[in-house]
Every structure is written in structure tokens, then in C-alpha cells.
Length: 201
Image 1 (cartoon, rainbow, N blue to C red):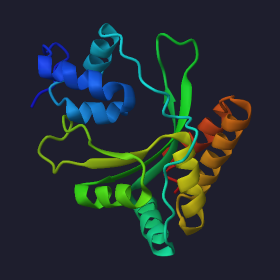
Image 2: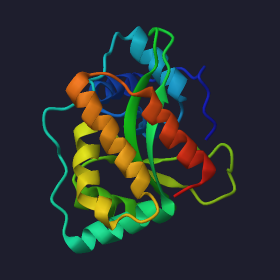
Image 3: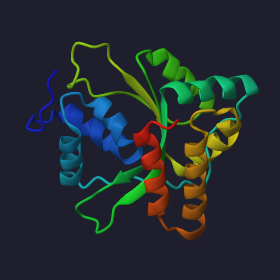
Image 4: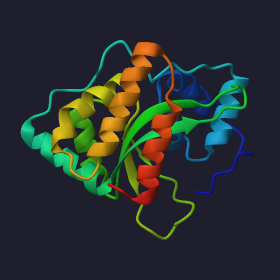
């Protein structure tokens, strides 16, 4: 179904948005409202004066303890089909961009990603944008973004990572500096961005 930011919002959609927007990641909201673009969701939430919680810093990690077998399996998925990065988020209402750590695994098998979510105990799964390749099988993305969840998870799997270990080290350094000083390290963002652009796993 084609998304259009001009689509009118149904009353049922407004009720659902009020319920999920304050506590859901924006990508999860996109999957819940297939008739609307991300821009449309932001605009409607702003009109309704809805505010989202800060998902990057939480008081406690939700990540479960992983067995050695699960660590190796999930680390293999990240090495092969995943991304460890620092995302740069720009907002016209803010003078400076915000940076936050992110882990993603992409796959056409949603059950596989739901398995990862179950084992890890954190994160979410959403349907990636199909507009660019409508004739291909749908791709799903499992992602972890909350800062303490990313930190806890990477500390558990870093020794099992082979191709993405350097990215994991940079993200852990970024999180440690952020939690200690509340400052955002642009240099670490640039380092990991160059690693990922070069395809240096």
C-alpha cells in the first residue's frame, strides 16, 4: 500500500498513536501505521502534543544473560547480516545533532529476528521500507537502540564477534564517555562511519 503524508488519520489510528507513541521506537510506529510516512507520524504526534521518552539512556538494562551458544549464534548473524553503528539524528528544532548507538540485523525471515529479540530480551522488529524494491521479498530489521541495552549486549558478545569487533569497541567507548560526561563524541561517530562505509567488517 502506498504511503502518503497527506492521508487523513482515522480515529482508531489516532487512539493507537496516543497509546504507543510515548513508549515506542519510531520505526515500530512506522510498522504500526502502514498508511503513513515517518514524517506524517511525527507531524501528527506534534499536533497532538505527544512526547516520547528518552530511549537512549535508561536506568537499567533489559538484556538477558546469553548462553555461550546464543552468543556465538547471534554474533555470527551480526557479522554476516548486521550493523553496529552510531546514528546521527538531525532535528530542525535542535541546534546540534544527537548521536546514539545502534545495533541492527536484517533478514527476510521475521521468525529468526523474533528469536533474537526473545533471547536478548530487548529491542524490536519492524518491516523495512519496501518502496524502493516492491518486487523483492520483504526485509525485516531487528534493532537495539537503548544505550544501556546496547552496552550490556555488546559486552556479552564482543569476544564472539570477528568481523564487527572493532565497531563494537568503538560503540562501547562512545557509550562509556556518554554516560560519564554526558558529552557526545563526534570523532567516534566519524571513525565508525568510515569503517562501515569502507565495508571493513
